[in-house]
Length: 277
Image 1 (cartoon, one colour):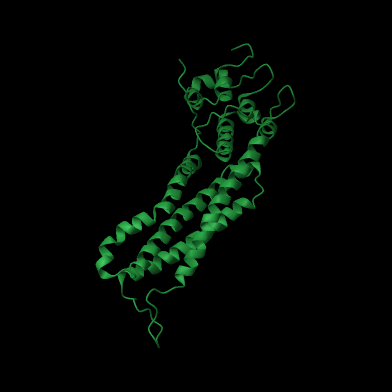
Image 2: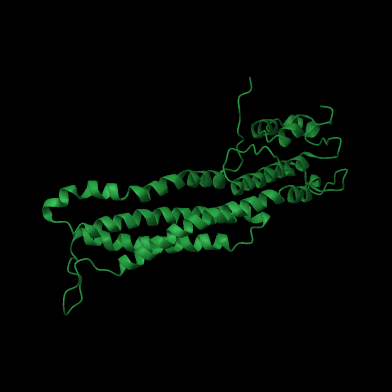
């Protein structure tokens, strides 16, 4: 123990040393001796897990994802503690749950603002794609045959690709807009950062990427009929250059998408480590 009566368990929990704590959990012989210790203020390991760490040690960007991993860390420690520690009071008559709510109020506010900013920027792109996809899906390349109303190019493979991709772009973009609007209208409570808000953002980004890919395929397939036969060999390089700006946006948002997947499906948060000489 140190001068504050904190042993290795309390220090590992306080400093978010997930690997150390997980290693000690495997030592069944130690649980009865060092897992029930409290410090000089009466704080158990659960109290220390509930306290906010200003250094933000988690290996994840964004205040919302930081909050998600704070909740996961608190629940991970809680599930490893005895039942009577859940309602234990420290010397200040505070439970671990009360400490968690009070110390993370600022992070909840920052996480809500971060989610709103991200949803605002993505919803604008999704709304633009939905507008273009609606106009595209209602337009028939080559027109229709007089008298029967059937598309002139109905048996062309490119026309089938155009029809399917434009419909996918419309449905995906509308779903993405709905998900981002659900985030913007959310109350952003503490419990919502556990899975509700990150899942909505993950679903919204997923459908946004699908709609971006579908609208690009729809554009290329529909424009393919415009080119003359002698220019068809140059169509694909032209389309590749044309799609670069939209693809650049998707690439910029892709790291956020990967972090969302990692934070959502990872049960135990991972700490960032720096080398100390």
